[in-house]
Image (cartoon, rainbow, N blue to C red; front, side, top):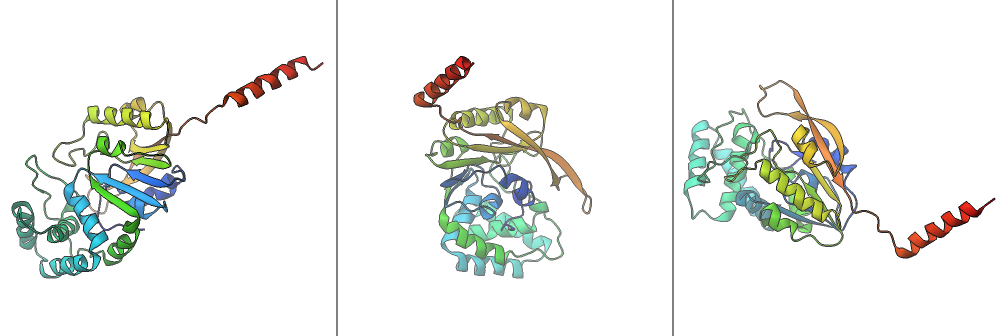
Length: 285
């Protein structure tokens, strides 16, 4: 299923491979929301979806709560603002109107995403959205995707939070899936960025959680990621890349899916039974 937003690194194209590694559970927890492709292409009873980008979470929350008014407002932006000049005017409004109503801000965010360069979501250090115009002949208005998301989102809780805070909310029965900014690629997703220390910190958090809950993580296939994820079971896949590639060209890159699940508990009675069985086997003639 396609998503509302264009999104570099979206998991929509690799869901067949990824779904094979996502176990059943009561709730899927995603500390890096992205395009919500995983939520839209899985069937968990509940979802906890988080991200540090308040504009992203605001968009999802407004579609969940006010889908029809959002569609009307966003469609009017698409229909009435089709030029490069309009794009930069709306981008300035988005960046400089602190009092803009949140529903209107969500519609602007969708407009900028669909008209900006290749769906990149990038902010400067002051928090200003600074993606250039994408120069598309006819940007796609994702009506069907918005309507499908509004239905699925009724199972989800959306929060604006970093991964550390989100991972403190894990409870029994949860499955954790992390899709952080990839190592060695575009990592300045938001004003704080995501460096090697953040990559290591995330893995440390996940190792602690994996004693109780299954954890799945995607990342680039590099020596660094394989090193910090050496305690995980790693599967290598190939996926399409669009950023940094000329229009019309195809480029594929290696990624990894890293999985760690709680060890099966060994009960004292089971251990004694195994020992007794071994003793009996040794005594057999």
